Length: 322
Image (cartoon, rainbow, N blue to C red):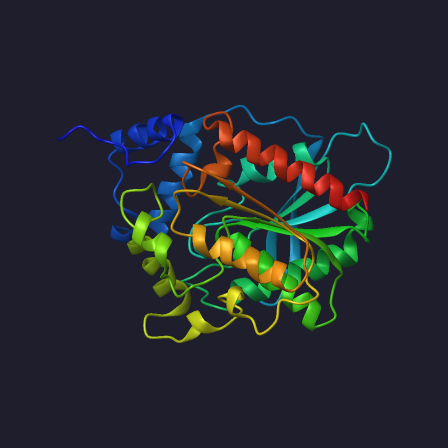
């Protein structure tokens, strides 16, 4: 087997991570069934074996949803402050097909630790068992429940934020628009980490980084699109799948948008930031050059992941203090 060579433009730490990943000889997601892809992701995350960040504690919950109970995990900051914390409703990534409370524990824990806030991580229904818009319906129901029950959770009911990475960023953006349109819960902030906001799966960053730049390639995105939206479907143009295509981005919550410099989703993250800014929405946009999709969860491995987690925490603290 030829020696692996990392792609151009990535940081030294990213190249090292990719080299280690290549040594595992994992089959591409597109060659797996959804269940096999989920199991592979869980094993890969478990193999990192990094010590968890210190927080106050966690609680396993089951919250009511449109098709039954939705598993969720509440992360609470330590009790150094006597004031109830703000609450971030968090949606994990994974193309609406893979990912779990476990796979994104480090991200949720990092946001709790750095943001000094509570985090409610939502295990929404996924495709292909439950196609679009099942994950959207669960995500909005979870937001409504969180807003109605914040005080029972020991949190502030007037300080509710939403956030997520990749497909989770998609859901956070969508429920923010839904909350506006339906006059639902008042969302004070959005944390969108390399968000998937345009399911048309095209553009310059797809051309630049669609092959060889980590776990998310163009083929992978089309695999997610097919399972979530259907191969011949027009759903990819529906704003609840592609919030970048929403008719209006007015009156949405302020946002932190984080992108990775070598990610096929880079440009749509940039475009979403521009769409919000054009409507007068306050946006803190941060792009980390030389890193790949998924880097946010690699704290302790990639320096930029630590920086991004701290930046997200700082933004949440500022949002909740207003």
